[in-house]
Amino acid sequence: MSQPFAQLWSETWNSHDADAIVQLYADDGIHQMAAGATYVGADELRPMVERSLRGYPDLEFSVRDHDVISERSVGRDEATSERFVIEYTMTGTQLEAIGDREGTGKFVTIDGAMIGVLATTGRIARCIDYLDHHSIRRQLGLID
Image 1 (cartoon, one colour):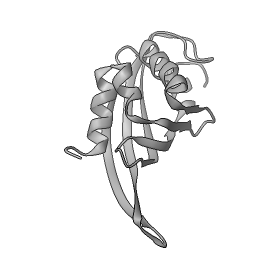
Image 2 (image 1 turned 60 degrees about the vertical axis):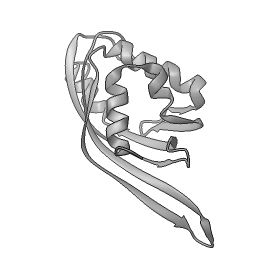
Image 3 (image 1 turned 180 degrees about the horizontal axis):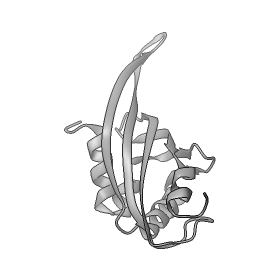
């Protein structure tokens, strides 16, 4: 890759280009939220991305730390995969409802981490996103 994957990931989200964000994933890519929701393929990823961008029109991700590790599968020298981890800070003002979280107009700063596997194409095959939804609700004033 010409640039670290984490940089590509944050720059793509920060561009607010839903098509480009969805293209970060393999055609059958899986994005699982640690809180439970799972999105598979572009038909499920696109609404999640668009909902996030509408809900937080000033959404921005900054990378705090990252790593990509190439691994060879045991017994299959030709098979390699790249695992990645991205620690990030997400900021934004929630203006529209997302799920059961109403739009409050409040600004949030949330730390998270995403761990996953890149397909041979360099796109996300699968990942799990550890985003602190409890902290989001607290900062929005929806819980104490």
